[in-house]
Amino acid sequence: MPALVECVPNFSEGRDKSRVDAIIDAMKMDGVYLLDREMDADHNRCVITLVGEPVNVAEAAIRGVGKAAELIDLTKHTGAHPRLGAADVIPFIPIEGVTLEDCVAIARRVGEDIWKRYQVPVYLYEAAAQTPERQNLENVRRGQFEGIREELKTNPARKPDFGNAELHPTAGATIVGARKFLVAYNVYLNTPDVEIAKKIAKTVRFSNGGLRYVKGMGVPVRGLAQVSMNLTDTNQTPIARVFEYVKREAARYGVMPVSSEIVGLIPKKALEDAAEWFLQIENFDSSLILENRLAAVMSGKMAVGGIRSGVEPFIEQLAAPTAAPGGGCAAAATAAMAAALGGMVAGMSRGKKAYAQYERQLSDALARLAELREQFKVSIDADAASFNEVMAAFKKAKDHPEAKAEIEAATKKATLVPLLVAERAREVRQILESLRPITNPRMASDLAVGVSLARAAVEGAMANVEINLGDIKDEVFVADVRKRVVAARS
Image 1 (cartoon, rainbow, N blue to C red):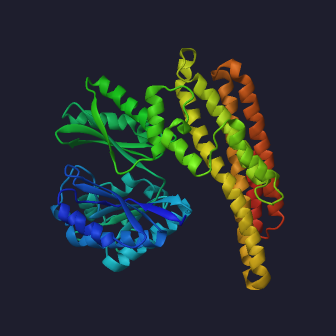
Image 2: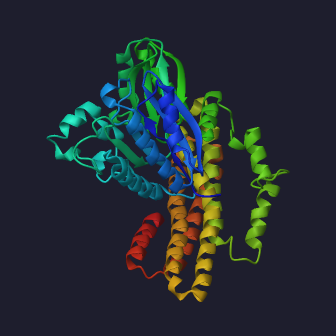
Image 3: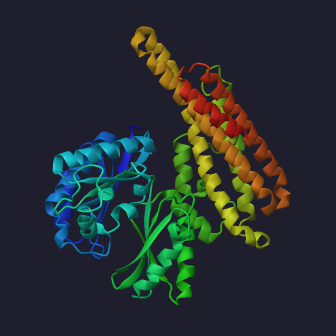
């Protein structure tokens, strides 16, 4: 599969369909796929979801900014949603074969090109931010188009990252960044009193002591008060927990949610987690869903006919007289089993009356262990792939001596994969230890096995780290890795 990046540009137009169509037309390119478009007249904003190869998606986003600057005049724009630019926010999100750091590089390149082509100044935010105070979108956009336009005349701290110390007269400025997947989630209340929505949003958002990975504000939409939120990590803070939190806070003011909506797209796992939360299904696993099981079986990632038939192919691959998969893959698989056991124990206790007082801790543990389990599964293939890259680099260097530098680069990559496995396995062990006093004591043996597996995963992964370090000449890199090794073994 080619490298894939998602881009979710937000434009300050939600009422004129012809303008939105023109912006989308400007972004059409080979290798770029339109997954979704959302228009909201009350917010006067549209959200477009694009996915494709990094270079093409970057170019599509740049062209979209140019067309928006041509068609949207912020001096005549009104709407419930805060905005700074005609093309207001352009985030890049890693999907496949791309890291967050890669998206940071894309965002900075796109920001520079937007200024050069269209003279629309650009602010960088989230992971692409060049100063800590600009990491949060709210900080960058505070004051909006009208306020920032005036403040730039006297406050040099508000100068854009690309461009002069002034906004485009009609298109404002564009905020470009890199981030993880975000879910735009809104809850409507059965009241037009937007002050209630604002109070609830203030309580639910993390910046005021609410739920982690939640940003929120209260706005009037379609005659109702809406709690408008961005969920920046639905693995850590599930959407169901957010809804229940809003519902509880609403009850304090004598109101209740009447509906909720998702703007744009949402990962399937987030909805699976919501189903598990509300239905309280015991021993729930995503493989219980027919379509998931079918896809796994057809892709060869799952076998049917008992436990042995599922794990036997991997064991036989390890036994085969080939260098990969090897010890690094086995360490990642061991860590995944440790996380799975912890998830089983936490899941068997959550929702039970005897452990009701630990509901929050158990839910947090379940969410984090599920995330770690998925990361370990990815690392199994990543470890084998990184080893193959090292072998390929050696082979290339035989015929092309000038390519010897690629050997060290590939070896560094092959070192970081097991290092991450070790660090995450250490976290699994700590979580499993924390579950001992708050879960069913009859499952103590399962936790003991999980802890032992996590320890073995740390040591196994570290063995792979150490053997690679001996071939790396970059002393700064080696020193940094050794510090992380010591921390992971603590």
